[in-house]
Structure formats: structure tokens, C-alpha cells
Image 1 (tube, one colour):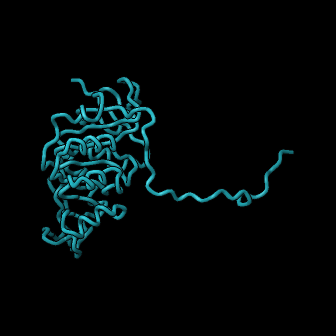
Image 2: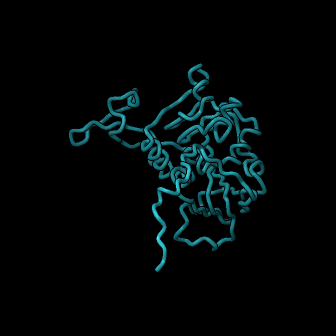
Image 3: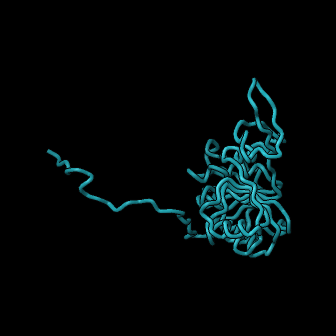
Length: 245
């Protein structure tokens, strides 16, 4: 089966429909599948439920789908960097299901492992626990969380091969690998597309069996930075230069 497609629009052809649930990988705007999200926006599909650690920022990542009001519901952990999200939520135009970050990660991982639910102490006695079953284990109260499984997962990897095997780099490894396992169909965009066998088997985090379609990012693909926190270089802070004897 041919997995490599010429672009994001071609890779998503026939997969999108109104009201579907989509997982989008990345952490902040690091490792987000921006090309695939752009294609989702261009398709005009609407009433989406999106599962992501965050909602991108204004005009970037899932922020693009918020601007076009294609998202009806978000299942997330942190959305504080998106003014459009806040405006729609406070106006009652967007549903939100907040999750502690570790709980969200485990809901996704468990969904990919075929586990329907699990118990955690996180959230007990808070608003997170409202309407959810609890149980006692060894004298402690635990909260039951249902796992997550999507119609479609869109992920970003550093390297991928024609068989769909994926390798991630640094922060992009946070949510992309588990989301790749937790959907009916996973579509990946990769920075470097190589032939089968060129990725060290020990470096494959997502086996190709999970990935149905893949695209290569074009040359010069821009990876945005959410917040630059660098300071101006102060030569005096380095101390005196050491001269060789």
C-alpha cells in the first residue's frame, strides 16, 4: 500500500467529515503538524472535536481552526496562549474539557493500548472529578477516567520512511507518539523522508503499522517559536579569556 502522498491535501483526501474527532500532536507549537492542520482548515470541515495538549496560538496550529470556527469542542490541558480560544469560550461558542496534563497523556496512551478506562488520584475532590465515578483502593480515593480514541490523528515527526516508521526529536516526542497509536487513521508529516531501512530500528518510536499516510515537509518549512526567552549576550559574564601558555 502506498503511504507517501504528494501534499497534505492529498494525504487527507477522503478522511475528513463534519463532526469527527481529531487528535493533533505537539507541545505548545513545537512538533505540531501545521501543514496537515492547514489542509483541514482549507477543507472547510466543521463541528470538530479536537484533542490536543493545547490549542496552538492565534493563527498557528489549531488556532487556525479556531479562527474559522471549525472547532466545536476542545479536549486539552492548557490553552492560555490563545486569545481567540478565550474569547470564544467565554462567549459560550466553544466547549472545553480540561484535563490535568498527565491525565490527558494517559487517556491517549491507554486509548492506543485498547484500555477503556483507568483510575488516578489526580483531580479527586476538584472540578475535574464532577460526574465521574470514584473507587477506593488501599484506603485512598481514585477517580475513573475514560480513555480517548479519535477518528483521525495528525502528527509531526523529524524522520519517517516510506513504510511509515517515525522518529521524533526532543520536545516533539511528548504527544505525537501516543497519538499516532490512538486513532482509526494516523497521517504524519515528516521533516526528513527516507527510504526503508535508513532509520536505525532502535530509533523508531512509532512503527509504520500505525501510520496510514505520510507527507514530507517542503524545503524551508518554518517551525515557529512560541515565546523567545533568550537574553542579550554579555561578554563580561564569561569572565577573562584563558590564554594558552
